[in-house]
Length: 193
Image (cartoon, rainbow, N blue to C red; front, side):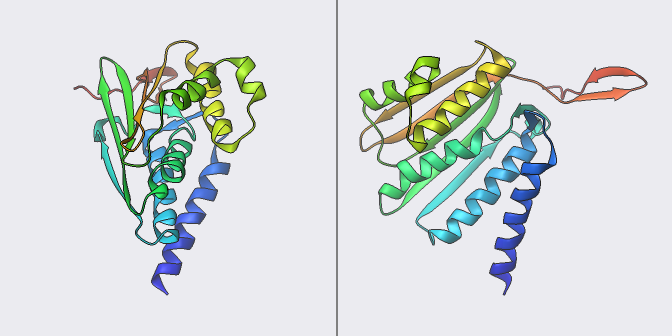
């Protein structure tokens, strides 16, 4: 049937993407495709228990971002926020601000208190990372590690949340476009704004 075929195509595209390129960065368009496929599969699995709003600046689709950074955050938002309620909404907004690419992921799920936020953000420290054991912490730890490897200290990762009111994750990284080699020279492709 058509629905089964769509599920197979989404899963196949996700599997192809994971093995396609060993680079630590990818175009935003590829990451959005990965997240969209993941959300499609989860929407079928959870049969309409959540909806998704993607608000992405189309001019940024060629930007280079760390691979696999968005899907674990969306998964955490779904599993630890939205699915804890009967129905929920996840919003992913991506835009440019002052030569930086901004990712805002918000949900209207369970939210969390300041203690939990501090616990998650403490994953940035190497000592805390080594002691962490739960899956939620491992995915956040992995994101911090990759952001640090790529951007050193030049990134922002913030969590705003309150119990019962949902959570917003804010990430800001330098804006990078793919490099294009033409005539032996490396040129940066950039859309004028």
